[in-house]
Structures are given as structure tokens and as C-alpha cells.
Image (cartoon, rainbow, N blue to C red; front, top):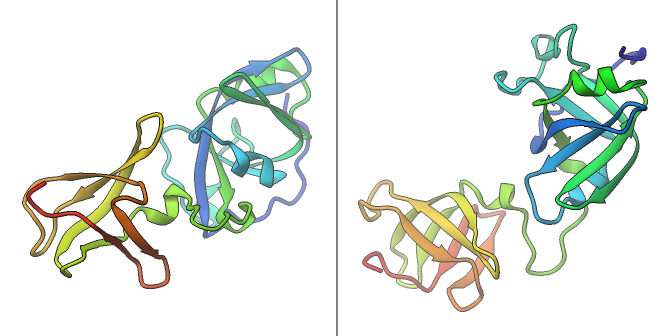
Length: 195
């Protein structure tokens, strides 16, 4: 059974999906979360995790309430890494049944609560949507996503406008990425359209 949540704050405008609840952990209402990052610091940076059911897109406002089965917000008491998962306890979950009922829930955290990245470190969510230009000033498209390959990540650059007609895969390493301009919403690379 879910414990009383009190007045929950509104779903944050800068919410970022950071993981998914995969099931219960223990018998006292703990949950197990599959993080969407190899380094789940976003989950540890906030004590407030906002939930959405698997099929429901995140939407701020009164209609974003998760419904009677889903608490809209979990106030996290404790969270830690456990293998490939994060295990956590929340004030609203008081038994295993309540935790199991959340299996599949999407976990969101306010972007403003993320830890400040170091120099030359970036969150994937900040790179998606950036325009990509090469040293000659040619548009190569827009970052549509990143692929984790082990030692480094690869940018998936979707065509658009005068960009090449095919998706480009550019390693996100200093040998190919000259500069990331988050304010200017542009990523500058040493890459050609026909690579």
C-alpha cells in the first residue's frame, strides 16, 4: 500500500527521464531501478523522483498526475548502486506489494538538480538536438542520439536542410569534436559529409 504523499510539487518543466523501475527490492518497499546512464549520478543528485507510467508521455500540469496506482512523486530516503541497478527506498512505499506495483514506471529527475559536469563533460540530454557543423562550416545535421560503444560514445547525426541525406555516426572524442557550444546550440567537428 502507498503511504500518504502530501502535496506533491508539479512535474518539473526540465524533467529528464533517467531510468525505469524494474521491480521490488527486499520486503520493506525498496525498488530496483535500471538507470539510463553508466554513471547514475542523476538518480543520486535528487531526493525527488517523478514517475510516469510506461505508456504515458511526460506532461507538466494537472493532467500529469500518475493516477491512483502510481504515485506522482517518490521522496527518496536512500539510494545506492547495486550491480547494474540502483536500489532505493522511498517514503511513499511501505511494503513489497507497493514497490512491485511500480514495475515499469519511468523515473524522471529535474535537470536543474543534476550535478554540475566537469570541464569537457556533457550530459547526453544536453547534446541531443544540437546542430552539427564541420570545420568548413557545412551543416551535417542534428544530434539525434548517442550510442554507448564501451570506450567512447558515438553521435548519431540525422540529416536535415543542406546536410547529407544519410545518418552520420561521429565518435564523441576530442580527435573529431572540436568544440561543444551549448549556448549556441552547435557542435563543431572535424568530419566530412561523405565519411
